[in-house]
Image 1 (tube, rainbow, N blue to C red):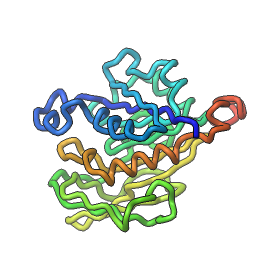
Image 2: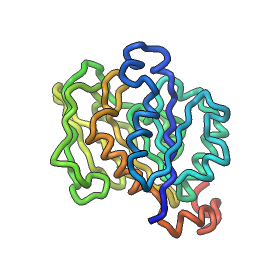
Image 3: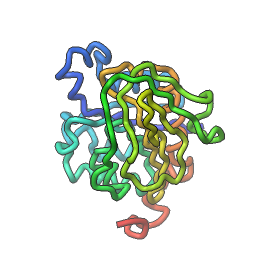
Image 4: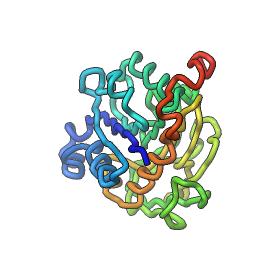
Length: 243
């Protein structure tokens, strides 16, 4: 089996601004996720953050990334448009993209989905959440039970202004009664996109094994096939896929 090259991208601002967040993720959310993924011998994992040169997403990095994981919240507007354009083209050519939590407001997610807002209801009361699995045969939920329970999490509620997913695999329920489409799969061009909602920075979400297992499964699902992996951009011209 060929290795899968994974880049975990994180804004890395909350950890610098908040002692509480830093106490949960002393090395950053990107390393919490990346260190777990490194336990899989089939993954080659690197990290990048917003304040790196070119946001850490240089041509060399993107050319050697099969799946990009994206966490952002405070600084969506600081992401350079030319970097967004590069990532967009890579996804259309076959690179997988996993967008976490507040990444629904990122430029790259909105560009790929054609939404301008990604508006939703939210409430940060630290409520219990259950992520119900509704497609048990999907590869992303292999090894996951009937639901994942988070003791405390920020509430996201419908209406979530996104296009209807190609596949919906999680629906969340919160103590306040709200529900939310928390696991959404899309295909754009030759690339696969997985939006996975959990991950509010003030709670240890990325220390919970089931959440990390879903992300790991998502990497396997979103990665290009072995044949496509070595033919990025040669299956058909990018202009024939999507402008």
